[in-house]
Length: 271
Length: 257
Image (cartoon, rainbow over all chains, first blue to last red; front, top):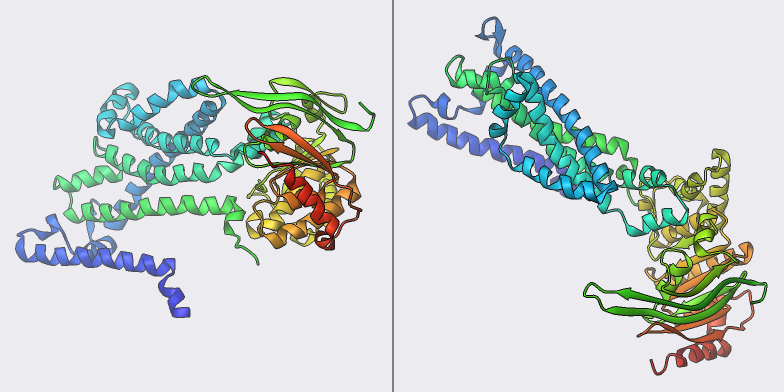
């Protein structure tokens, strides 16, 4: 019984999943190592990537790999976080406005869709020429990407509130303000978090991607330097691995916060 | 109109416009006086307009025809004075609030001070027999318990009129019978006027002072049957010939539908 429970547990599934990726990676790494002249440029072994991360060897000036990536992470994540926060606040406010006024919804929604459809790399130079500063543009783009999922999901959350809940509030002769604070806003929290879970990794990806456009100390800057031969290629691989982990973590953190502010999500059904 | 009348419906009609511009009559010329403290059922098959009628009383719909007064006022005035407690088919609980806080919700809307809110909520939970579950979340309760929380919440604002829209139809037979007795006990204690919508004949007969039979196409009031069974009623009543006869009488008023 216990064993069966373990095999169907979330932890076990995650374990199998990670192991599966590692195995497939290694199969190809061995093939690459046997056939290509510079395998590290194509697909190094996982252990090489991990070893490089923890090695004392200086990869750039006086910095080891861990130090280099650590500083770069801070830069990029800070920008992603600021952009994410701005995008979340604006996205939420717009969803609120769209729900309050049908006219606002009709006018704003097509623009929302449009912003979502423009590729980030196409948008980046435009934002750069407007703001005149690459770091500001990085923040703005992270915000723009966060904006849509948060706004669209929150609006869907407002619209999904049961009709009867609104009728109850109506029968209590509640004010519009009370309708929002007591009913609409709390009930759309799960939808809001769905938006956050989608956009948190997106904000980070966007921040890294826009890093590559110009110099600086961000993850993307290091990544493109490594690709251009300015540093060992393992910097590139380490950054790829680390950013994947950060992306997944950012999703998990959103889930954790949701559970913290929604105690009812932690309870089980009693008999 | 006698002075014991609580809700007066005079020639009420409701006509909807469909999207292609046709008129659909949901309810036509319903005239009915509901007395203070009376338990009255609106009984009928789906499409007979019983829920429409309840929603008109609750000021959730405005009739296209006729007059309605609730204690001499319009339904809107009655609603703004918080004279209605409503219970829906589903319990409509707020899953992020504990059971106690669910019952406290309407009191928060009414700006009742906090100590009194807690006090009143706990009294209502005691009335429906859920004191031990005050700190549980609705997701942890069974369907019958959830519906009882819904009733406690409706009663918490001390409404004069309790409007119930098929409140027990989603429950299993055993839970439903238990809740019938709970509801009768609560009603006896609190003396509310109850308007109870149902499509279950024996439920209507068991609970009510009067059963209003509605027929569909178009929705109309086709009969009002007095249920002169003694109170307090218990489950044994259901196997008496008097009860069976009344059920048969109500059923026969559906013939020709």
